[in-house]
Each structure stands twice: as C-alpha cells, then as structure tokens.
Image (cartoon, rainbow, N blue to C red; front, side, top):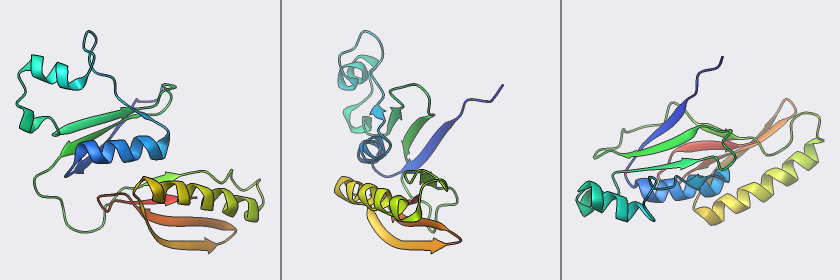
Amino acid sequence: MATDIQVVFDCGDPDRLAKFWAGALHYKLQDPPAGFASWEEALKKMGIPEEEWNSASAIVDPDGRGPRIYFQQMDTPKPGKNRLHIDLNVGGGASVPLEERKKRNHAEVDRLLRLGATRQRAWEELGGYWVVMLDPEGNEFCVQ
C-alpha cells in the first residue's frame, strides 16, 4: 500500500500562494472545520490572533485523488533555487504529437500567467517540450 503524502511549501504569504496553486492545479482551498462557515469564524473561535490568520493555508484535490498541499509561513525565506519542484503534465504524453503537446502547453502557460506565474524559459529536447515558470513567490515549476 502506498503512503499518503502532503506537499509543504515554506513561503511568505500562505493565502496568496495557496490561491495561486489552487487555480494552477484545479484544486480548492481546504474547507474550514465542520460546524464553521469560514476559516475566519473557526480561527476566532480557536482564539488565534488575527495577525496570525495568514500563517498557514492548505489546498485539496476536489476529487480526493491528489495530495493535500500545505503552505506555512516562514519569516525568512531560504535563499537560492528550490530543491523540489512540481511538474504540471498537460501535454498528454509521448503518444500525442509534439505540435499538439506544445499547443496544450502554451494554453496552460497563458492561463498560469494570468494567475500570477512568471515564464522563465522553454526547453525542447529528445522529443520533449516544457516551460520553466515561477510561482508568485519565485518557486520554480515546469509545464510539460
């Protein structure tokens, strides 16, 4: 049996990054605990000071298949390139002709740019094609 995982991002603005990745992955913000209409209501009831409300956020796959992704606020972000990144596989794989994969890729890149991503560079080699991008806090990811 496979081990369930959660992916965790250390970040400066959990709310902003959670909303970006929810849109990018077609996920949704995690619902508040049962019995609460909103996270604000739950956090108030838990006695969490308002200045700490953006210390964490999470998104989930609405179909329950993908991992939960958790965003935790870090006072000082780590410098340099992230050592782990996400690949968004939108092209359809090697069975799809390269030009069709590029077309799908470009449509997704355009959508992600509107959500707040930044395009870095495109790569094409050995029959593959992908675009390296940055999320709103500069974390690298690829669209392939």
